[in-house]
Image 1 (cartoon, rainbow, N blue to C red):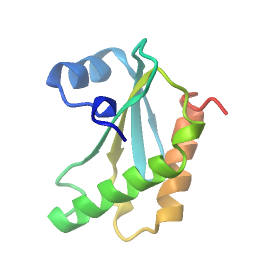
Image 2 (image 1 turned 180 degrees about the vertical axis):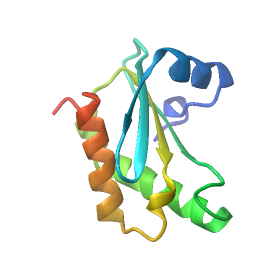
Image 3 (image 1 turned 60 degrees about the vertical axis):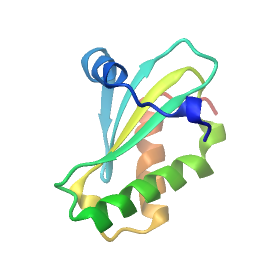
Image 4 (image 1 turned 90 degrees about the horizontal axis):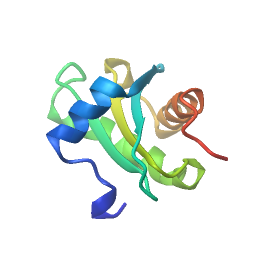
Length: 112
């Protein structure tokens, strides 16, 4: 993931939460919005409800890796925010990957 492909600005997050759409799944919630750019920008979040810092960082790593493995399946031109749910604790990569891709498919942000 390149630096330009990471969501950082509070205004971007606010715009996605306000004008975007959301898709819940078992382990992740996906917020998305069109960004009219030739690439997709992403963010991976885990709140304190997920657990302590070790569990939150693991949840973010699992979501990032799931996205990286399937990055070519996502359509370009979206802002995506993946938020870990507290049910993600103790899950394996394959479980998180399946949940992430299921949410993406239901949100129609996968092109292939």
